[in-house]
Length: 137
Image (cartoon, rainbow, N blue to C red; front, side):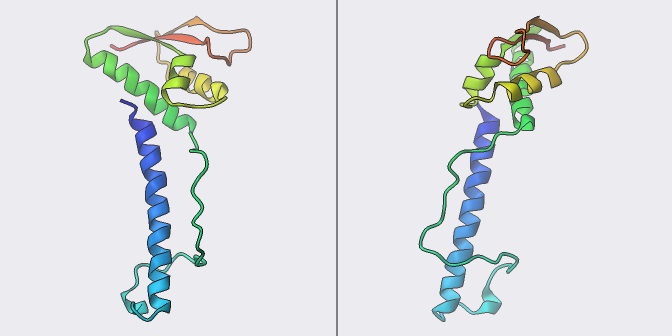
């Protein structure tokens, strides 16, 4: 299961819902249904509009990619496997990314611990074919 993608999606949805609640709250105040004293935290200064823009693309961070890789390693450990070989293409596809191989490759290298081995590294160092063997013990 892809927990980091789920978390990123949920956080984006929560942010959108918070904005929508604030917009609804401001409308209720304007209509006199809601008193400003009853309003939630007034830190945001949101203009009321009929269109609430939705994020077009989720932003993936290197930290989220590392979390995903570490989850794969932890899953292998819990299954009793002594190692797992991860290919950048599999991480990229697993997270449903587009053109983010440099981020994936950096995250893969950052997840390496003493004893882990680069099985294959492309000449550029950043492509779908980067392959690293991580030991789970």
